[in-house]
Length: 625
Image 1 (cartoon, rainbow, N blue to C red):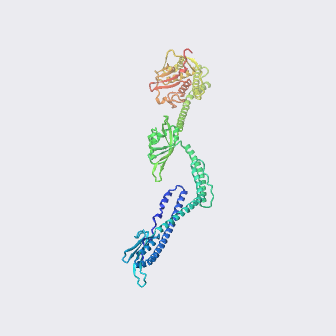
Image 2: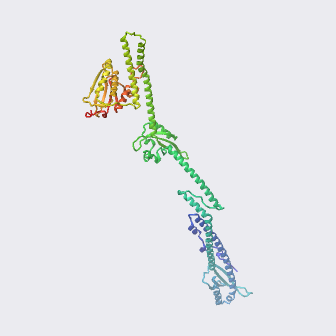
Image 3: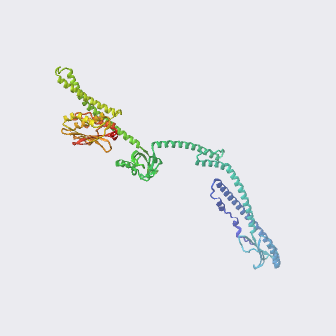
């Protein structure tokens, strides 16, 4: 007996039951939340486990079914070969066909045929193919004669079983397994999700609400959750982190406020530059100082300055090129209002982690008031030093001016007291008395000048005003100075516009002004010279009183000293021209009390013109006069 096995004995998974897990994972891919990810994992694991289990069960069932079908085929072949022995021996074709038709009624039989000894088909039944496929099992049996003594091969029976029924049963079983798998997976997934939400989801949602509150102004609250598992540990750690974060934020806010206050006090604005020292950032506060922020972006500091000190800027740029910090670099700028402002900047170089220089960062302050105050302080100090030197010179000079008349007074008085002249020498007594009187008058004049200047400078000077014509004090002054002029060989002249209106002023003050100017003119004019008093009505309706001499003149440098108290052009002790240095200072003070002005014009070796101007408010109209 020969047994021929089918190639389908090696199992092949049916295409109808091939699961494509990729399709399922494609539906669940890229979940957006943790619940979805857990669901995807659970479904993937459940489907994979179910697919493996179902496939293994199907393989085992298919193998067992195939073995059972093979065993049945062998039994049927043995039985049918025995049953066909007699009809084939008798060559009863009808009986053979009847047996084959009865056999073909079996749903597992696809084809059956009987062949004689020459392998010619005598009869066949069944609708299936006779050929060997992956869905068929074939079994062949030799048919022997029924006579035991003469056992002869009469023919051959071939039976083909179809495995379609087996495939259908396996498919039905697999579908039942899949349905059961889906139900179990759904139940397990629902339970897992419920447990996950209770154990993980709720605390995570509360933590998420707390985390999202960072974008609001409300403070974040601790998560209320208590459990002894890992999730409870995570929530406790989050709450501890939240406490530390809250404390750190409070400390950071306090630190930021502190340093913001420090920065705003130390600087008015902040700035940053690139490696080429061009501004890339300037804080908005610079606009409050009248400086256009946008106009400064993209340019260097020196491009927006109005300083002309090239040395200062060269030194500053060398510091920047060396990438060194700097402090309180002061320069001038011109804001949008056209004024001149002084700014002070300090900066620190910036470097990346690899050491590459990326620019400067610093702050700036408007120090205009400080610079102006410092300049005013320097000027006040200079003026104080000038005044101190002038007073020192005055005291040195006054020692001579005061000693001369005092020595004369004391000397003549001593002679008269000791009776050295005798009682009869009346003319000498008279001469000495006259010298004492003149020295006393000179000393009194000096003291009066000192007191008057001090009184006016202290703001206590007062005028005794009245209406009068200027011709009167001019005439008095010329008369009083005529003796001095005659002794010096100087001619006195007078010029005035006709019909000059009267003025309202202090006549005694104007007389003292004229006496000081005329005395100076006579004093500094050599013999043969001329001193002229000129009265002119100016275009502004005021009146100019000028004293013009043809004397030695004054240099332009020394003119600036005139009119200052105690100032003298020649301050040496043995100077040629004596005086306390108060005359022109008194002139300036008295004319300024009237609201007028005083100025001097002079040319060396040609002469000097000293002019006092009475303003138009001092001129009295003819109707009032």
